[in-house]
Picture (cartoon, rainbow, N blue to C red):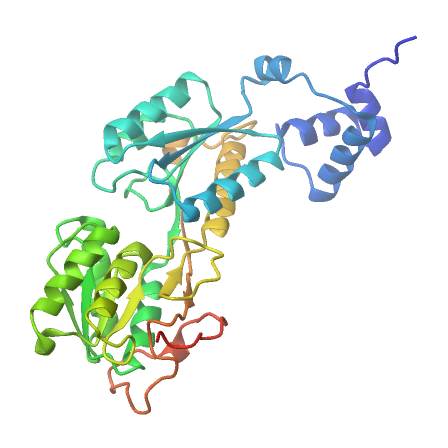
Length: 371
């Protein structure tokens, strides 16, 4: 004789709660305590209870899916974001629908509209461009949307990003304490608003301690770093800066390749640092870099999204038009590498300089210098 399928009532009895509480814990229709949530989940798994997702979606008018829109150039650091978002959604019995965009707003808009057609319950998006993605944010309509990594300034959505001021202060302090008085920025475009903001932050952090110049723009890729470094070296020894600050690790790799080929000692003659670690978790510490907290960003994005969903449901629901957009800024980690000097230079910091003592730094030990 076939054993009957366990019911919601069976789960409630096993967990020692009411059927209504068990339903809320399994569907997320109303918040319950973490303790009750775990008890109901455990009972559900022990009994082998499987909720009818289709029937639930029809009844609750929710699909229990969340869309994630990312730029197509996803590398190691965005993989960490995908993993943390996926884990956070899975813990809440939500499914992930992933979409990739080309670097223009039309793809962002198309992806958001596609997700809306699938009736997703929320969207997490890393905009393909700060300048052109406003329309994609508006395309979400009443559906909760959270921007992550970088964000378009809008009251329409919450966002999770990097504390840019702290990030640049950490890197500048590290270089100034190692006697860098002339810094050259490579791979940032002064005409792009996001890059211009980073350049201003670098100059603000270095004010009174170092001069920050910007190299003619080359793309933020390996070849761009090579071309920029060749220009610097060709200008002669007098034009060499004390430190080259690169947009990311790929640019830094190109710069380092040229400096080595030209016989310029790194970090003794020129120090090199990166504003973005492209491979979190890597053991190769060739380049001093800023490691962005992508897993934490993903978890915060899920938290904000779920909170927005709860605020928009049930009695006393907050109208979407009246919600105030929230901004969460997370601190990066400075990871010292072989491309900057191992120890600060005594009395290197001038009176107006920032100090690494005022900003958090990584505890990763400094590797040996590059031969």
